[in-house]
Length: 246
Image 1 (cartoon, one colour):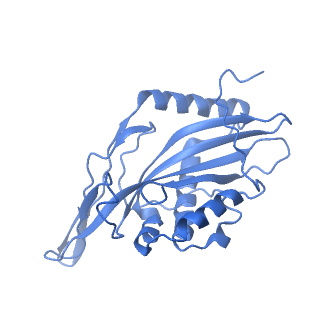
Image 2 (cartoon, rainbow, N blue to C red; image 1 turned 180 degrees about the vertical axis):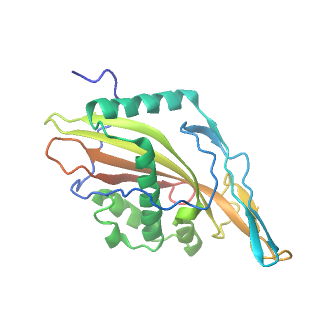
């Protein structure tokens, strides 16, 4: 039976034998995120993080990120996930995939920040690694630092798009574009970072100067080949860091 609907996005990466394995998250992060499975047309109405010290015990209010859902994208991605379960992988779970994508994003972004391109082999498509090397060679140190996203600084994650690809030789692929919002303390120039919101995050005891953190976005595309007999793993085929790797 043919798929009733799918989006053609035939962009198979070179070196598709390089795969990224996802491991299920076993650690509960110390942050509060407004979880909404819808994609966002606009994100972040506010971020707040406060702390105080009472009798030596630190009291902390957790970060909250509020997103505005786009109903059309939400319905479309939900339908695509149904197609994945119906025609490709009956055990596919978007929650487990999202957890794995967060881990992959944090790990790969830290390697990218340190320009460890050799370490990206096997995780990111070879042609993408080559493009990243060209973009990163002249990046200022502050920009390289801003590429790194610690797992605790990832404020919000959502699927932005899903694509299906059938090739003439019978090979078939699924790609999922994930969008991440994360905080960075890297010092970035105001004139080149227009549109990125800044929030004051207070750490330590009262009277100390608060640390300024900026909320940035990144898009990572994950692709898996579902051809029979192929190892069931995912590879990163697209990396975009808004305002940093334009």
